[in-house]
Length: 120
Image (tube, rainbow, N blue to C red; front, side):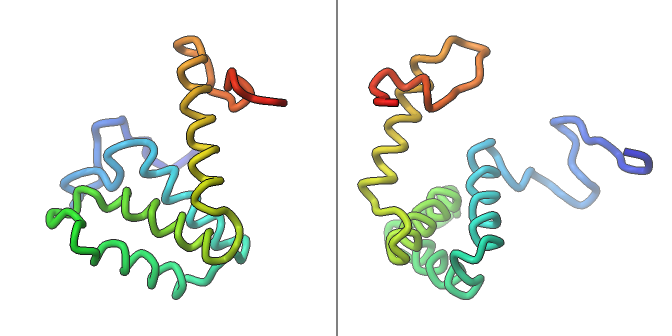
């Protein structure tokens, strides 16, 4: 794009000391929440309340190292409360992706259809 600098993987904009996301799954979790909000599944106030509850739990890491784990927990809780996806459903889909990842040859895209236990 004209006028837009493309940063290498190791460059950060001026003033940033470390990346916002340390792993790709964190960026994906962030994007999921934004996309679900844009579709009207919840308000920002609802999201902020659930996330705040998660990060204030007594077992939360005091250094914030589990922030995106808390982010996912807040999303799962909110989806269950709204009746979109219960904990068991989330666990089942996560397990299917895990199996698909193990069944996918290195360098190939991981597709849910690669789950050897899929009944598709």
